[in-house]
Amino acid sequence: MKKRMFLDACALAVAALFSANVMAQANTFKIGLILPMTGQQASTGRQIEAAARLYMAQNGDTVAGKKIELIVKDDTTVPTVTKRLAQELVVNDKVNVLAGFGITPSALATAPIATQSKTPQVVMAAATSIITEASPYIVRTSFTLAQVSVALADWAPKNGIKTVVSLVSDYGPGIDAEKYFKERLALNGAQVIESLRVPMRNPDFAPFLQKVRDLKPDALFVFVPSGAGAAVMKQFLERGMDKAGIRLIATGDVTDDDQLNDMGDGALGVVTSHHYSAAHPSAVNKKFVAAFEKANPGMRPNFMAVGGYDGMRVIYEALRITKGVGGGDALVAAMKGQIFESPRGPMYIDAQTRDVVQNVYLRKVEKVDGKLYNVEFDVIKDVKDPGKTK
Ligand code: DHB
Image (tube, rainbow, N blue to C red; front, side, top):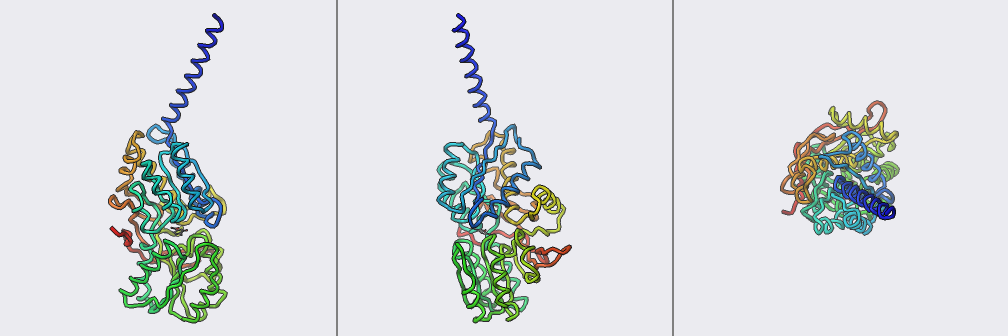
C-alpha cells in the first residue's frame, strides 16, 4: 500500500514537472540571435548583442504574457555555419524568430529555412538589396547600400567632384554600392572612371590605392564592411592620397563609429552618407548612446547596434500586437508597416517590401568634445531602397 502511494506520488510529481515544462515552453518566446561573434566581422556581433541586451534591459523581458528568451549563437562569419545554426534553432530550440545576420551571404543562406519553417527572419545588419526578396519571412532593420550610395552621388557633383574611382568589397553590398553610385553619378553629369573591387576576406588595399593614385580622380568612393574602414583610412593617408588632391568619400561603413575615434585627425573632413551616426542630434539618440555607453564601457554604438536595437523593437511590438498567440505569418504581418522613432531618426518597415524606409544623412568627420564623430549636415528624408527588382 505504501509502495503504491509512493508510486502515485512519483507519477504526480513527474506529471507536474512535465506540465510545468510545457507551460514554460508555452509561456516563452524565443529569439535565436545568430551573429558573427568571432572572425572578421566580430565587431558587428559585439555591437548587435550589446544593443539587443540593452533593449531588453530597458523594456523588460515579458511581453504579452510571454517571457522573452534570447539565444545567442556565433556563426564565426561563415555562412554555412549560419545556416546550420538556424536549422538547429528552429528544429531543436523551436525559436519563434530568427534574428541577426552580420553579412549578406549569412542572411541569404538562412532564407530557405525561414521560408520552409515559416519563421520570421529579422535582418539586423546585412545590407544587399536582394536579401528581402529571398524569403517572404525576411524583415530588415539595417539599411541598403543602394539607399545610402545614391545620396552621396547626388552630393558629389555639386561639390566639385567630376571624376571618381570606386573601390568596393567584392560581394553583394559592394557590388550594389558600386552600381547605384555609378548610375546616379552619371545621371548627375559626373563619371566613375574606374571601378575596383577588393576581396571580401583579408583585403590588401595597397595595390588598389596605388592604381587610384595613378588615375588621379577628384575623389575615391569606398565601401568596405564594418570593421575594415580603419585599414582603408590608414593606407589612404599613408600613401598621401589626400595630399595628391584625391578626396575620400564613402558610405558610413568606412567611418564606422566603432572605430572612428581611433582613426586619427587624418579622417577629419571625410564626407560620407549613412542612416546612422552616434552624433545624431535627437533626444532619443542621446538617451540611446548614453545608456549604451554606460552598459558597455569603452564602446560607442555604431549603425550595427542601432539595427539590432530597432530589430528588437520590431519583434517586441509584433509580439504585443499578436497578443502572444501569433505564429510566423501573424508575426511578419505585425512587423509590416511598423513606424517609430529610432535613434537614427524616423523609420518604418515598408509593408510591401518588408524593408526599412529611413532618412539618409550626409555627414562630415569633425571633432566634438575632442573626439571624432560623423556630424550630419544634410538629410534626404524617407528614402526607400532604390535597389528593389520588383
Ligand atoms: C554588410 C556587412 C557590413 O559589415 C556592412 O557594413 C554592410 C553590409 C553585408 O554583408 O551585407
